[in-house]
Length: 388
Ligand SMILES: *Cc1c(COP(=O)(O)O)cnc(C)c1O
Image 1 (tube, rainbow, N blue to C red):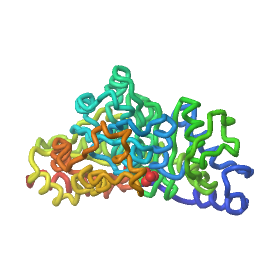
Image 2: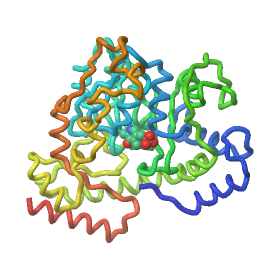
Image 3: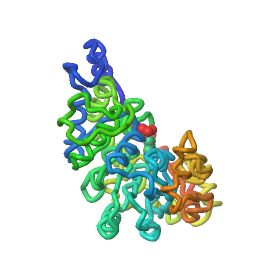
Image 4: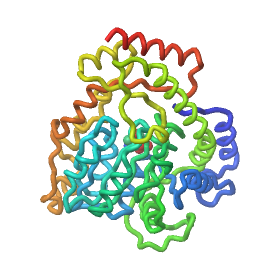
């Protein structure tokens, strides 16, 4: 999806020639500058750049003190990393249904909340914004933390607020498949300086040896190394300058296709919680039955999300088989502190999710399609629809 060019080449060249690749102490301060530029763009007070989106999720949960004895509600449709993050801090992931927006079904979230629910992770999958209004109302009512998984939604928004900045913390990914990318990388954002400090400690081996944006005053605790180098910082600074342009083009492409097929009653784009904030990476169509969806999928060369492997909870082997760590003494599923929690995730835990995923077909979108390529896509979709 991402765009890459001379801007990034020059940025990396500058870092390499400086011989200062470590984020601390160099003259260029690429990572520090990226963190400042990213938090300003997102409209949030703190940003920590780290090695991955998974790392950003784990550091967020650790910062919030989520751990053994806690349940974390995650959608049954997301990359496995969302659920793994809960296990990584010793908590238990509980899967909830999605609705036709492809994001968390807040009615099901409310049904699944118990006094053990410490956190909910809404996932803005494929850049589709979750219903953050309803989730924040539930948070107010029941008192849990919200960590937004914005790994597929860099730059998207809900009701004018950037995705990832509405809950307690937000996690972004800059891996190869995301909207902006350094090959690998991630960021955590928050408006809470204590969470920011605790995330720094976690991602820097439980130390606070170096000075970040602010001196660390929070008590030190054990973490791991999720730091990034100046190369990542430099690439991401260049990438960030491209973000608005990418989103504008993706949204233009999506709107053009939706308008061009609006006269076809057999085509129903999935509803959106906020079409203005949608990232535009994907155009989903939903059908009444699986057979029609399959036929359309084949005809347009699209993808049914039911087949995207580790994004569907019934493919999350370590979770279904309750192997939540490398050693059984560290396995959250075997921890007595979790014995009273809902430990079981079954292949049929979220039947509504499976149904929606199997009746939905994705047309992925490209911000760099020419007029001609875009017209070809439209023609292909129109022809396929008429054959249904
Ligand atoms: C990509 C992704 C992640 C993990 O990001 P990495 O940078 O690969 O660790 C987490 N959640 C979702 C929804 C993702 O798409």
